[in-house]
Image (cartoon, rainbow, N blue to C red; front, side, top):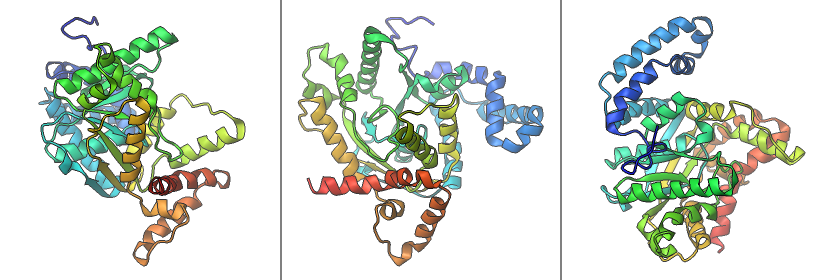
Length: 374
């Protein structure tokens, strides 16, 4: 696949409308994709009748995707799966701050990062139901080891971030391409979602990496623009995503415990994929997504911008009962069922991981207190 001057981001961008039908056809003809969907939808039956499940899945997908020939049509299909997931894994999903945004605006949404797939999915769900355009999603190529996974994500408006670049020159080229693509998207009226840092905040401390802010400026710095002017043009909106329960909390606690005790942690081959599946299918309880006000002040440095994003994300973060209990706070009588749920979840955590488990839920409370105290 060659890159042309007319389409300089062809290798990393989401698929366009005129590419959707061919990609869908290719996916339906990929046995590994059909098998993966079968294991996801029918885990038990797939063990004993994989062939039958494959036939069922291919038939159902062909029927469902027969008329999908545009990005918008694909988004509507994904919305049906999203609704099913919400019904099965959440008690209540709520939003705030959407009224501060223009319906036809193009924004760079920068959020805290707790879940690989669900963070941008919940952001998109709120925008979708507010009749706003959904976002283009930044996703690392480390998660796209299978071609069909890459195709599936790019059908869902994801663009690829090269995290496997080696050496200074290759890394700088990757950062410049990413910076240019984000600028291009905003300038052409397409909103973008990126996380405030590379990798999830496994300990519950939501902190923005200034290096991400430097990356955002790279393409515009080349044009001679000042940092503050460039940042204003990106229409940055901080977003706080809070889960009553993180489906991957135990996995994260075990990783943190091992790092603390041995100084390192080695991921298993398919751990990221396991995290994605668990994040989608696991119990989340209540979920709140808070859209902050667009950042319009003059930020002279990446560090100043990162601090402003931190203040907005922490300040708007919705504290659940799980956070209050973990931080040692009291809950009122109306929340006793949620308190019991927290205790039941804690009982499943190995004793040697409970300190890390508690900290990841308590740290948002502590960070809010620190922010309030200046």
